[in-house]
Structures are given as structure tokens and as C-alpha cells.
Length: 178
Image (cartoon, rainbow, N blue to C red; front, side, top):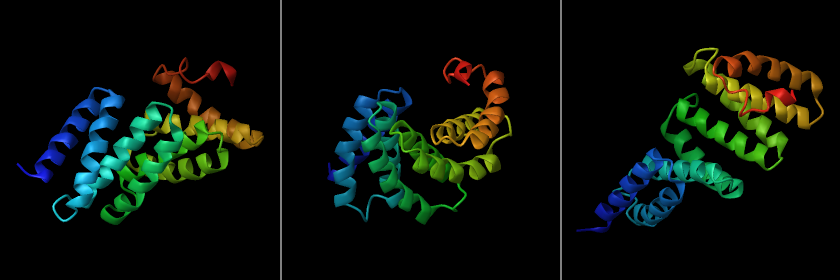
């Protein structure tokens, strides 16, 4: 039994716990797999390392540890950019997760930067009224609102409203606040 097999087991456990939204265990197993994959880089596909960084980033974001989320998402991004087309949906999701993490840190400028990168990618892959697009509009609206750019805030929040209503997401998004 060699290291790379152990790394694969940890990775698969991380994936399984990720699918169950058990982010504590996701983090535990991915952080065990990562040094093994780095040690045996030639046997572990670089995209696997990118996936681990990405999933760690999402897990930390979901635990409200935005600093760690950003750290791992920014490690995943160049790997994904190297192995995927620049408008690949996976890159769009990294941009969106970075936007959300920066928003949660009250860094509205960076949140807007990443959400504006995610939006055209999401528009390519999702229907206009898909909830993913509604979330980006909402996030952009509140980032602009926090910057006191009321014109842009209104523009994006008005775009988000019918989508969030359609998907019954108004309670989780403070639409009453708008």
C-alpha cells in the first residue's frame, strides 16, 4: 500500500463528506490528501490538487472562514485556468465563491470584481432565470449598495428580485430589506 493510494482514499473521503455537506470532515480529509498529492505530484493530476484547493475553499466559505476560503480558492484558480478554457463553468464558480467570500469580508470592490467575472460565464451556461444568476445579481446589488452606488445597486437588485422570487429565495436573501 503506497502513499498515493492513501491520498486517493483521503480524497474520496473528502468528496463523500463534501456531498453530505460535512465541511469539518471535508477539511480534515482534504488536508490529509493534499501533502501526499503534492509529494507525488507526477502521479496526482494537477487538476486533482486544484479540486482539493477549490473544495477546501468552498468548505471554509460555508463555515464562514472567509480568509481561509479566499486562500484556497486563489490557489485553485490558476490551476483551473491552466487546465480549462477561461469561460469554463468551474472557473465561474471559483470567481463566484471568491466574490461571496470577499463580500462576507466587506471587501465590496473585490466582491464586485469577481462577481463581474463570474456573471458572463454563468450566463453562458445557465438559463437567464437560473438561481445562480439571481445570486450573482443579488451579491452585486448589495456590494454596490455598500459602496453607496445606488444606481448600480438598484439595477442589480431589480434583476435579482424576480429570479429569487421564482425560486422562493426571498427569505434567505433579505429581499424585504431592499
